[in-house]
Image (cartoon, rainbow, N blue to C red; front, side, top):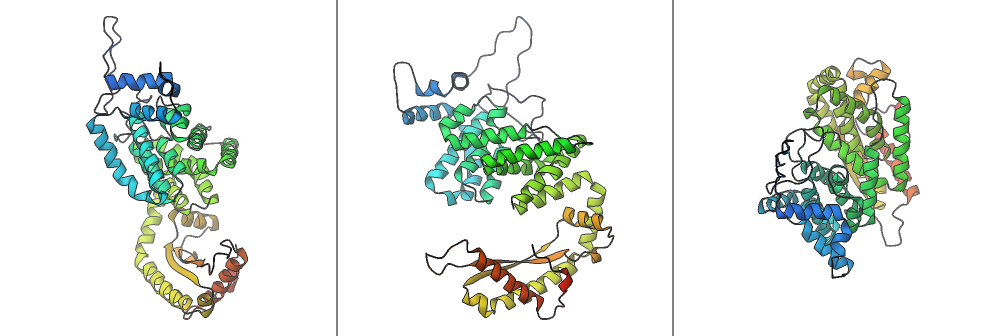
Length: 406
């Protein structure tokens, strides 16, 4: 919600057929009010009268289904150019949401059309159309394989705060769940902002209110995290002071929240991007040092990964348990590495044992429909079994004192 408009206040309707914000008339008393296109008047009436205006038309009562069809038609008052733009954005979203099924995919496309129409004419600091932001948020959510309501909420999360759309209308078009997520995300976005100094109490209050929101529906927080992640990706368009403020808030609140929710890919990127803006000198220095060792790290990872993969694939116990095994390597994220070195007072990368590491993911297969997918005891036993194999990996020296059991 931070990286938004070129002007202090978001542009408001009306807008012309090409999605460009109209020039505001001068304040001269002799100026006449600029005419508006019919489709703009239609949208403005819809926004002013509310959803009931679409469902209860003079002289004709209709079903909710009939009324919603009219409402969607009111929201489709777009020129060919606008429809083409919607289709371009949809070409990006559609392949990522196919896992949700045909009916849900159709609902998501409707949410895209409404979001596009609501944000038409609004621009981000980067100069790009604002609709790019909710589209990117929806793509992040679909990468997490979130449900249809969450993806739709990602597309609509800024509409009520930044346009004339109301929560009532969101609920009428997309249901109570989407309305609740959008409303919750909007409230979270209005939490008190952090100051650079002495923000401990405000930080605690932010976290408290966020967790209150999370108890209502954890999807509210996931939408907010996706919103923040895309804003961090475009933070270069903000002024330095704003970059620092947003990065501080991200590092102290949103990255730990992503960590607690187990969304590791969000956590890592939020931390590293914040690190880059808050400590640019340290970021560049550490990044340069890692690049100097990149070849050695890659060779070590590749060799270790292959040895471990062969060992696990040939293990009779894992075969007997019909367990799928995935072995992947990773280099420690920049911020996490820097934080560990600072905490321990280490100046050399050689003193950090997990600059590179391997991750083993076990997926026990169900032998029949009666098997419990959440068989924790079996999973824990298999993890300890693999740990034992790792400790005796051919060609490697075990370090028993460094084993951590989480």
